Image 1 (cartoon, rainbow, N blue to C red):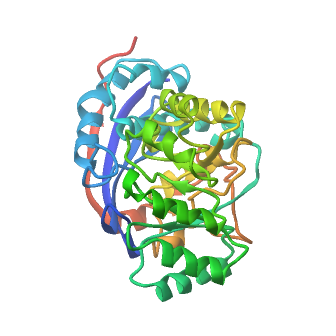
Image 2: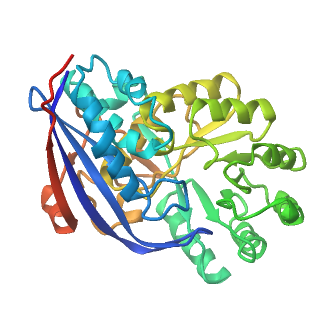
Length: 374
């Protein structure tokens, strides 16, 4: 397969409510849709998930789309791609820039699945027809607002709730939710808001029967996370630390965590994610699928991954209406008895709703990939 052209659609979807973490507050989802068209006119779609500012990782939306245009698409233009795994190797010499790589690589996976007239889930060996999903709740103004919001999500059927925490927005908030929902599958996500001096706070969280504490320390702190894990009975989960299989191996060897939040965008796409999932299963690390406020294209890729057997813990995928009044795909993803159905149609299983997308489109750029193939 070779690709004749690419279309880069820059869009911004308003969030139903602002989403606040220790990094800051988002009021909208600013992203790109990457459309790749092969020689048979088949379109594959990926979603560029980098955030506008370099707080979550070093990448930003501007730097990532620049890498896509200046480096990744020219590489793709010069090659016949025989299977989607080749794209990971094709891009491997480029350091970092995992979200840029993932957006293009996932579009290739979608195109290949469509060309084989299979769903992406089937193509990657997923067998589940539906998946249990959790919900991530941002920092709230006060305890009462948080408890009320969690109650709403529990009523909607979400089987697991993740609370964003930060210093002064931690113990009383977790305590209130646990008292109100004593049997709820509950976890806390710090987004690197703590350090070694906060050990007393993190040890206090041990009493709340949490599924895990996610990313308490910094993104390079494998050793410090290992130090912390030895002092807690609650599992530590790593998120921002994990950019590759090599990072998972390092975390496992050091004892830095007992769980991994696996995000397609953060590890460069599907090929690396599949290797990480298999490693986690073989080495008894809990692995689950994280989310990045994806619109429908990114959400569809996540669901295909989470439908594999390695994923036994509800991920941060959520229904479309968790974040957006309207999604850019048809059909939108809806929650049914705490689960999302895994699309069975060809490719990612949903189609772009161009009428909706047009309302939120900022710009569109078409790039011809006609340099020749080898």
